[in-house]
Length: 152
Image: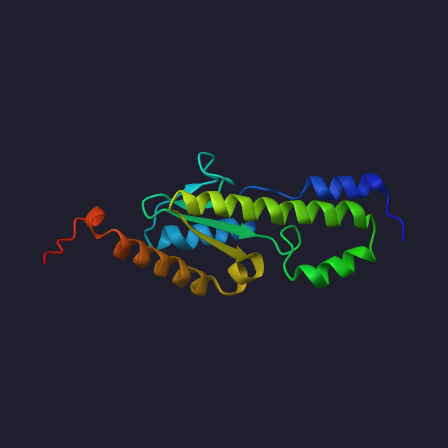
């Protein structure tokens, strides 16, 4: 089934890279819990969607399609669809870039968390629990930063 390139182009232009519905939902939940963050932090590799710089946590809100969830199955579907070379190359490039940025963030001492869009939409509380556990872990790892007195 051939698609009109003008319609496809118009549809693709509507896809956002910042302030997506999944980012907004997670940011609103974090803000409501009292956590302050930076959004699309350009000073960090990969410009994390949400950065809790106080705790060195970088959070990415990934769409299932563009970041290749269940990549092997998705790749098979793409091979049967329109313009498979383009889409497979694009998503593999996205996955590789994500991997490279994660490594850079880890070297900077950041905890990196990726959430799939459907998980954010359907299980926001569980996503918050994962983030809060990472915050707790960061506090344990650096107790002197919070002014805790640990004397021996």
